[in-house]
Each structure stands twice: as C-alpha cells, then as structure tokens.
Length: 76
Image 1 (tube, rainbow, N blue to C red):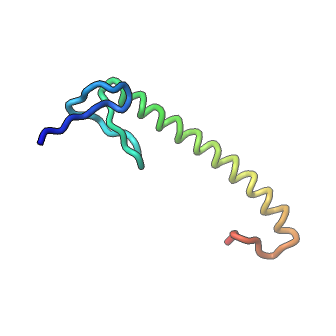
Image 2 (cartoon, one colour):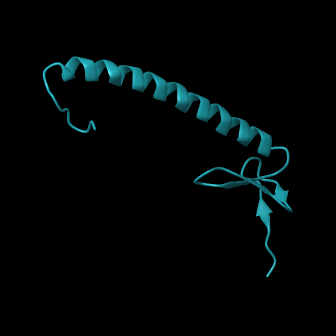
Image 3 (cartoon, rainbow, N blue to C red):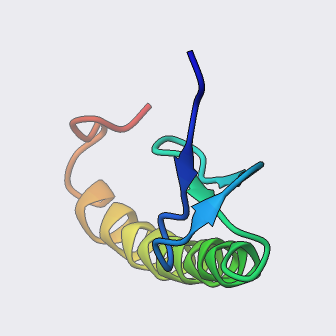
C-alpha cells in the first residue's frame, strides 16, 4: 500500500515530510518546517519567562505565609 503525506502547514503534497513537535508531531514540507520550528522556539522562550515570574512570586508567597505556618501545603 502506498503512503501519501500532506504538509500540515500549507497543505501541499510532500514526498518525505519533516516532523516537528514534541507531543503532537506534525508533518511539514521544507518551506513550512522552519516556521513550525521557530514557533516551538519562541513558545519555549515564553514558557521560560512565565516560569521565572511564577518562581519569583511563589518565593514571596512562601516568605509571607511561612511566617505563620511551619509547614505549608504542597511545599516540601
């Protein structure tokens, strides 16, 4: 049985697609693959930035509520 592939970016037929993604991998042509990879790269940068903000805010919460409680829930 023959297999045919379609680019998940532009919809063109692709003989040998490039798969991009970590969990939900998609098939892309050579023209669309760099754009999909750029998306993943920028998304990861945003994830790191959001995580840094969360860590800083969590530290403030730990100091604030840790004054009155010896052990906080869900904190090792």
